[in-house]
Each structure stands twice: as structure tokens, then as C-alpha cells.
Image (cartoon, rainbow, N blue to C red):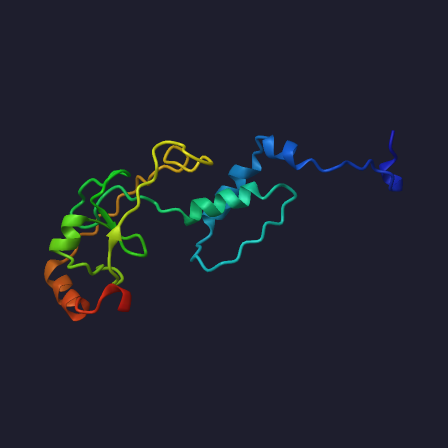
Length: 166
């Protein structure tokens, strides 16, 4: 029997491995709270918990991971996670290869940057649980058709500058 009122509370040794294995509701609570924040990407994160850092690490992975957007923003063509036709700019604006080459002239209509092929997230868990099943592609469609005349004028003003120099 311990007398907590007299400062004689029992001491317990912290067991991080046991804590790590617990299905704790605070993980979902934390995701909801962080989801309310309007983050810009230049914030600093402090893990001030008493656990292993797992929850902060996983949340940071969710925030840093490509969304793998489902369609071309211009023509709305399907671009599933395994598509080799998906092209992205550094802000992950997503367009199909045909639109990038034939309409956009490798100039992102949103930022003016260039495009590169979107990486393909593995379907299978080859290592550490980092795969499409654990981190699924976005289902949010961002259909924002480009005005061809306005974009052509914009693209012509910068397309002679290589993307790495823009």
C-alpha cells in the first residue's frame, strides 16, 4: 500500500516497447487535431510525448508523402497510382503526359515550374510497411481545366527557360 498524499507514490519503470504495442486512442485524436491545422510545410515539429515517437513519425510521413492524385487536373483522365502517364510539378500539380506535352508545353499552369514523371508507390509491402496498402492514393479529384489561350500566352513567356532555371 502506498500513501500518495504523503509523496510516497509508487515508481514505475517506463517500458517503451509495451507502450508501442498498445492500441491507443490518442493516435486518432492527434490526427484529427493536426488535420485542423493549416500547415504550410515550414513548421517545426516537437515530439513531446512519453512514447517512442511513433505517432509523430507516422503523422510526418502522412504529411510528407505524395497524394498520388487520381486524375489529370486538365482533362480529368484517370491516373491510378500505377500510371506511368502521370506527371507532377514540385507542388504535385498532376497532369497526364498528353496534356503536359501537347497543351501545357512542360509549364505548370499553377506555378510555372516544369514536370517530371510521378513516382509509383509499391503495391506490395517490400520493406517497413511503406506501400500503397498502408499509404493509399488520394481519391480527391482536382479538375481545373486550363484555358488554352491564356496558358499558351503564359507558357510562351517562360517556356524557353529550362525548368531548372525558372
